[in-house]
Structure formats: structure tokens, C-alpha cells
Length: 263
Ligand SMILES: Nc1ncnc2c1ncn2[C@@H]1O[C@H](COP(=O)(O)OP(=O)(O)O)[C@@H](O)[C@H]1O
Ligand SMILES: [Mg+2]
Image (cartoon, rainbow, N blue to C red):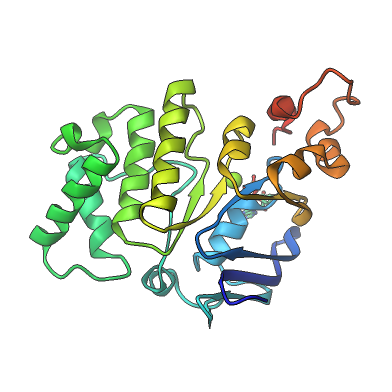
């Protein structure tokens, strides 16, 4: 293990009743890295986020962040340690303004902002960073899906995380919205030095964005490597094809998203 490992997940297991959601998962993320997390529906990606974020405790295994054990900590403690996340289903406070939603993120983050007015000032900066400044006073419920996903991001950024975990922030977005999101995520990496763990089904986006990709299926890691290596990996191709048929020569890896299993 090298010095610049920020997050380490070691042999983590989690069951829900009879369902084995994670079966001894291990991986690590280096400081400043963008790690993509992909896999068919039900693979265990969101569960991985929930375990890191302290929503659930692992049944076994250890998660360390920034040199300290975080598995077993409550979610607010994990947030204070410097991990923030977005949710697969956007859930802003719909009646609060866009600005207030982001300010709330700042009030509960790593460096507690003590006053509401300071939180709002910081929130305004983040809104301009995420191109939402002209929506600041609108109720969050009035935003389009793309804007709500950007708001989720803004709220998570307001907590000033070292590690930001994004759960399908590009789902349902059109091409130009996806391009804008990719640009924003790169800015977070290169300008703010934030380390990113990104769950994404939009294959073209995740392969462009990630330094490294981890592929899960049935609660296990089935591949890990550069985007190019992973897309050529036999086990990955099989996982994405499911029972729907065999691969033909003309199918490109960027089309694998078409084969995701539905649950
Ligand atoms: N809170 C929960 N209660 C029961 N089963 C769950 C819960 N969360 C996840 N699961 C199950 O764990 C497995 C992995 O789910 P999930 O992590 O959401 O997969 P993914 O995000 O990769 O689609 C699925 O079989 C899912 O039904
Ligand atoms: Mg999920």
C-alpha cells in the first residue's frame, strides 16, 4: 500500500436478509484519482456507497479513509471525515430555494460553517461554479432533472469533501448535459483536488472520465484497470451481455450499456 491511498475497502461483506449484496469486496482509491464503478443493476454499487458513507455497517471487513478506520462510524461522522455523496434518486428540499439547499450542505460538511449567512455566501460561489447562479432563489422543486442533478452535486461540494461519491449523476441527461457534467467533474479533480468515486451507467462518459474503472457483478469485483483494459475484459463483456446473447464482432464496448440487466 502506497502513501497516497485515500480510501481502502478491505474484504467487505454485506447481506440483507438472505441477499448477499457484497461478498468480500476489496479496492482502494488514490488521492486525486477518478475511479469509475460500473456493473449491471443489482451488482452492489449503491450498497458499496452506503457502506462507505456509514448508512450501513459491513457484516465483516474494514474501510479506512485518510489513514483512519471509518467502517462502523455513523454517517455524520463519515461526512465530517471528508466524504460526501450524491443519491441515485435526487431528493432536494423541494420547497427550499436552490441557494438554501446548497447552504445546508455547507452547514453539515467537513469544516462546519458556523453561520448561516457565511454558508449562503459560500453556497453562492458554488452555484456559480456549477452554473446554477441564476436559479439561486428558485424553489429546488422547480428545476429540470439536469439542474436537480447539478444541485445534488453543488450540495455535495458545499461540504468541502476530500472524497466525493457520485451515484449515477448523468442518468437521464442528454448529450450536451453529459458533456457539461464531465467538464465540471474534471474541474473538481484538477482545480479543487477532489478525489472522485463515480457510479455511472453511461459507458461513454465513464470511460472518458475515469483514471481507472472497477467492475462489479453479483457483489464481487470482476475486473479492475484502465478504461481500455476493462472494456476488453472477457468477464466484463459476459456480465453486460447477461443471457441476452453472444457477442458479435461489430459490437463496440461503448454499446455495452444497451445490455445492462434490468431488475
Ligand atoms: N436496503 C436493502 N434491503 C434489502 N436488499 C437490498 C438493500 N439494498 C440493496 N439490496 C440488494 O442488494 C443487491 C445490490 O443492490 P445495489 O447495491 O442497489 O445494486 P446496484 O446499485 O449495483 O444496482 C440487490 O440485490 C438489492 O436488491
Ligand atoms: Mg444503484
